[in-house]
Length: 98
Image 1 (cartoon, rainbow, N blue to C red):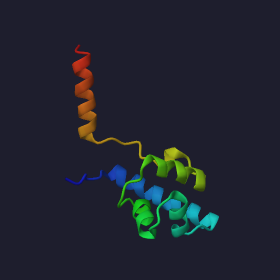
Image 2: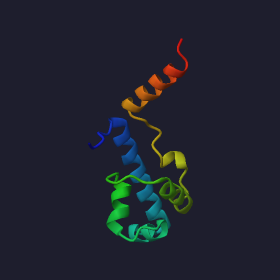
Image 3: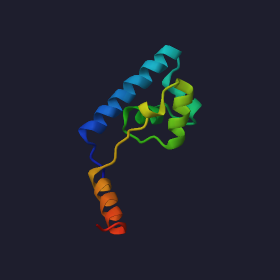
C-alpha cells in the first residue's frame, strides 16, 4: 500500500526540490552530472528522487549535502506518520505504564 503524503511532507519535498535546483544552477551542474556524482547512472532516476517520486537513501542525502553544500536539515524531512507516532507512543507506554 502506497504511503499518502501529508500536506507538510508535500510542502517540504517541494521546498527541497527548489533548493536543489537552485544549487545545481548556481554550481552549473546538470541533473545528469549530479546523478553520476551521487552514483546513479540514470538521469530520470535522480530526477525522480529530486521531485519526490522516489525516496532518497541516507547515503544520497550525505552526498547531496557535500556536493551542493546544503544542510542535511534542509534535505531530510523531519516527519513521521501519525501511525508511527501512535506506535512509538503505545510502545513507550507499555514500557512505562503510569
